[in-house]
Length: 332
Image 1: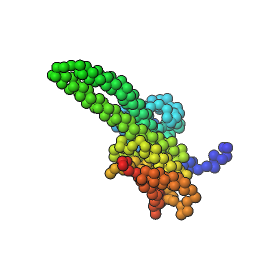
Image 2: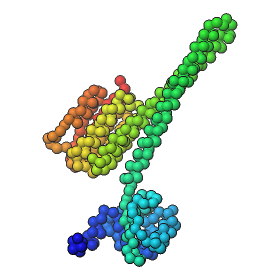
Image 3: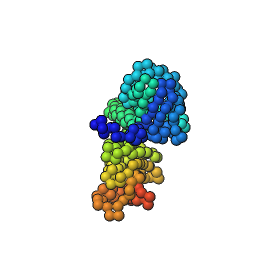
Image 4: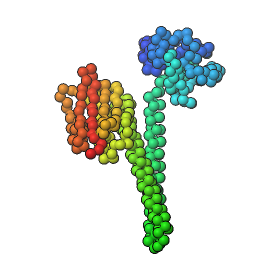
């Protein structure tokens, strides 16, 4: 084992590490940085001689100085992911989340490995947002159910009682007042029913958004990356009977990307415009083969378009990549 390590090129190992690597003096001066560090932080001309403080957002500079001094007083290995979430700053001033591991190297030097965790943080935020939307949707549904099962029924019963009482009154003025009250109750019931419809409609739209994001997230292991997901237009207008079609298009298309495209990026867009819903899935892969070996997925999506009186097409781009587009009217 020792002989094997003796034959390795230390500089080659340093440059082959996928994380940004910095060799920092106890004064905070960067003595050495690998190419990944220069790329990550945006210092193409090299980082040797820079103070490590330039990599720290200004609002965190004071705290970082105290942490650095504390580390040199008691140097010990610190693993990535330990402690609070950290942030770093690029040469252009942009700030991004990072994980950092530290290893002392002699009395005056420390090796810092820095990993950009923007994708991880974005994924966590999406999952938190999905959970929040789900909780809100469940709460909205509970409120709508309570209003329908309790409030509307009680108001309806009150209106029936007033109508029955009005039938026994001979005074025209009092009868007119009761009739006006019954009409007001009818207006209130219609308003509450409209509110319940809006609440449930909003819940359905949130459900559709959440489920599309969940499909994209579930396919990350197969894809090897996180696809982007975006929504445009009034998604709340997509009727419930089209939800499963929209989800099937997103699922089948991303699955095809994972199986055949050899892509490094993909995007899912759900757009509602001009009385129709469109689902577009694009990737930067190798495109479609001249004679695809498996077309059942596309056949299924074409059949879904036919059933909804919509359209479906697939296009391979000359410079690589494929776009799948599925459309359906949302009314009529």
